[in-house]
Amino acid sequence: MPDLGSLWRDSATETFSAPPVSGDLSCDLLVIGGGFTGCTAALKAAGQGADVVLLEFDTIGHGGSGRNVGLVNAGLWLPPDTVCDTLGTEAGERLNTVLASAPDLVFDLISQHDIACEPCRAGTLHLAHAPRGLAQLKARHAQLIRRNAPVTVLDPTETAARTGTSGFHGALHDARAGTVQPLAYVRGLARAAQSLGARLFEHSPATAITRQDDHWIIRSNDATLRTKALLVATNAYHRPVSHMTLPHVPKVNYFQLATAPLGNNISRDILPGGEGCWDTGLIMSSLRRDAAGRVILGGMGDDTGVQAGWARRKLAQLFPQLADAEITHQWAGQISMTSDHLPRILRIGPDALSIFGYSGRGIAPGTAFGQAAAHALLTGDDSHLPLDPVDAHIERLPGLKTAFYETGARLVHAVSARR
Ligand SMILES: Cc1cc2nc3c(=O)[nH]c(=O)nc-3n(C[C@H](O)[C@H](O)[C@H](O)COP(=O)(O)OP(=O)(O)OC[C@H]3O[C@@H](n4cnc5c(N)ncnc54)[C@H](O)[C@@H]3O)c2cc1C
Figure 1 (cartoon, rainbow, N blue to C red):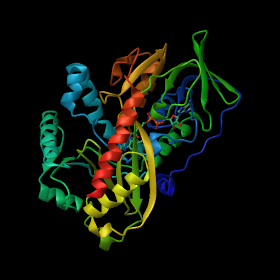
Figure 2: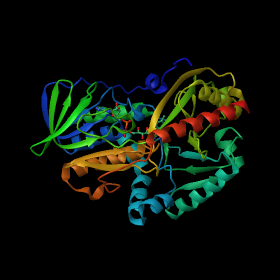
Figure 3: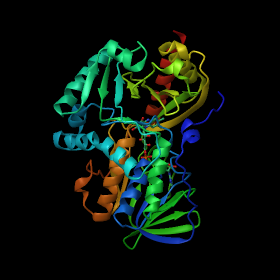
Figure 4: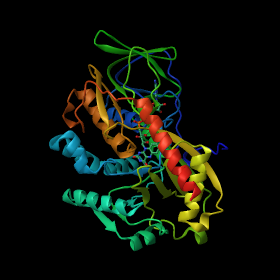
């Protein structure tokens, strides 16, 4: 498969660059990882007047934050009742409540810092891929209505009018949600943090973490950094660091392809309202448009020929007018997927946290968790964290689960490509 590259890298108007770290530094809070979690934490800390340093292994947005679909969802992949069943009612509702308003946080930060990331608050459509998918959506709707969420079930006819295809059996519209250009959003967060005094460094892998005299000592390039508080926000893209082991969490590949910008005569019926979409399939797919009028289709799996072949056929099946559309971009990323699909805040030592496992829902959750973690680490007050920190997290057979997801995606896509 030719490497067509990431659309988000080509279309981002937000730019950001920072030098590699060098010399000896000290700070109040050191953040490792320049994704949504790390950049929001740096922004929050700098906004509170703290001295914050962020180290990024590659460039800002190198991980999941620069590769994702851009759906700013209000909640997790799990329905809210399941969150409560797993965490208990009090903890579950605390998390549900934070995540329900997390899109507000994202869109407020975008407007406050003038982030040029194609924000669109038209909501999302959760599409029923099969009749049983519509039954699941109705159950999710009932749970969300009990929590006063602005959600509506659409019948197949309304769904066809909103999407431009009769390929779905109904949908759940969530008016709290929306879409962004994800790489531009994370770069904008980094720029805003920098403008408030945060010191950000790219091409600066944290390679060793040790503890000395009530402080954390971090090595990166030829630099030694000393900090009171530490946030490790490396998630699915974690690069090994000496003297610190993080849990292995299963990873799911997810790939996307994008058409060239489409003329209005071809595309006026496709998502005319601008909603971002995901479906109820276990091997999930996504669909959206961008500001230039491209159609972007995604699915679980890596960017090999099988998935790309499936995606082309799926696009033509949903929208026959796109059968010959030029595909200009194709890229993939890795999602850190915990077994219960819930994120974790892991206490890795005194004044030190690691956050991971958003399980495919990291834009709004990463923004909310990053802010809350910065506050907790700088004040010592954990009470505003969306989840209680845990002291350990163990996943059984993460390698096998990763292989299971990948094989499942290939099988589903290979079979559906032959239909
Ligand atoms: C293809 C795809 C589609 C997705 N779609 C959506 C979606 O539509 N909506 C949604 O809400 N979520 C989505 N997600 C999930 C979301 O993108 C992630 O949950 C989110 O980006 C995680 O952000 P993060 O800041 O925790 O980690 P990341 O963005 O992965 O950032 C971690 C960073 O840490 C850096 N790093 C690693 N090790 C080191 C080290 N030792 N030293 C220094 N830096 C290091 C990495 O280079 C990386 O930049 C998707 C994910 C993928 C991959």
